Length: 142
Length: 107
Image (cartoon, rainbow over all chains, first blue to last red; front, side, top):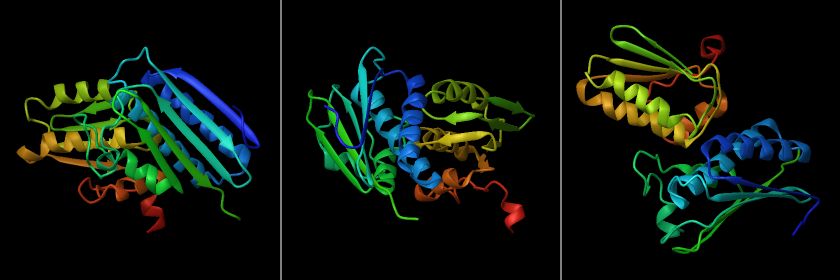
């Protein structure tokens, strides 16, 4: 359901080549809202980390599954939601600890960057029931 | 993506996005180059990298972990301000000898 002043929903296969498209959509959407270039860089990182998490952790590399990125523009705030219906996170608090990662060779800093670059982070997940990562970023005055 | 090799040094130049999309291929290429332990310095030149996230940082850290046990060195040069910020937040700037883009000019 559309909400806010502007709304964009992107559904795509969990193929890593689609990361760039997800970032570009978020960059263009936030630029239209008047975010600064620095903020847009941070928004791109937050989207990239959450979509990568869905692909690596949620779906374990299964490229036939669907990731959804939903962007909503409010007066001074961007809401970004990344959804997957993958394996879910059994312990969300544990997943937020720096350098913790269930996957080998993955830095585990994704959520740290997301937390630093957004004003609010809300993760809803349960084993077998997918993960929904909601991130909000406020637009600061000039 | 460009990889330049001399006898004991590898320079990796990723153009565009340094994310999950290129990491598996790059990792495989570098693992092949590093397996005989002859390479003592791996340099990641980010001058043409427009974006990097924790997948890229994770790969660079992985290469550091592969080379450090036999005395190898990893460095990151020409990092843009947003890229440098991520390395600093991850606490990897000193470990990876981070140098920013245009650092000399800024003194």
